Length: 149
Image (cartoon, rainbow, N blue to C red; front, side, top):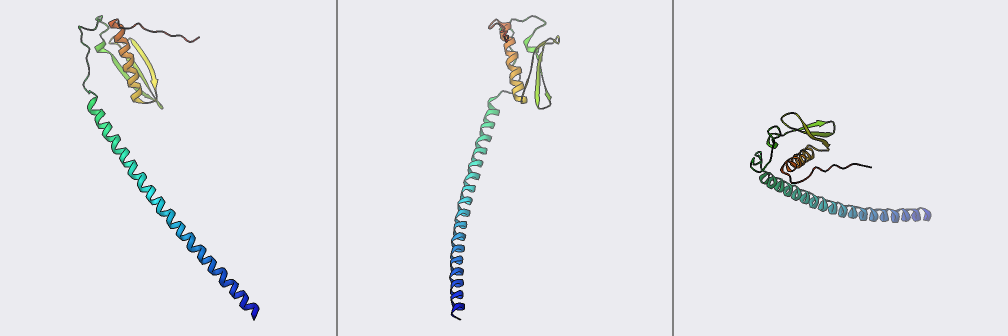
């Protein structure tokens, strides 16, 4: 019988230690959950602030970029009748995952072409090529031809 009481006492002690360990683990879990919830709320607030700032910047950018076509001043641009920079045609086409661009004169002469990863980049590159052409006509810069050796 003494052996039975000893086993019961050991089991009771072990059960109490397991209960204490369970309570400690539960408290730790609740603390971790509280920390994660606070971090999540802080991240959500930060993300919303970044989104709001991005929207504000995009709205400001949309206001700053003129949407009307800019026509060159004929008095400033030396042109030939068949090469009027105001008449350049810019084409941007989607080609799979990339965008191809080309610039043509009214006589269908190709002044430049290329590819870019985004439509915006393609338009920017086409605009730069057109500006190089106009600057060349104005005598501001020479056409730079580079070769790879």
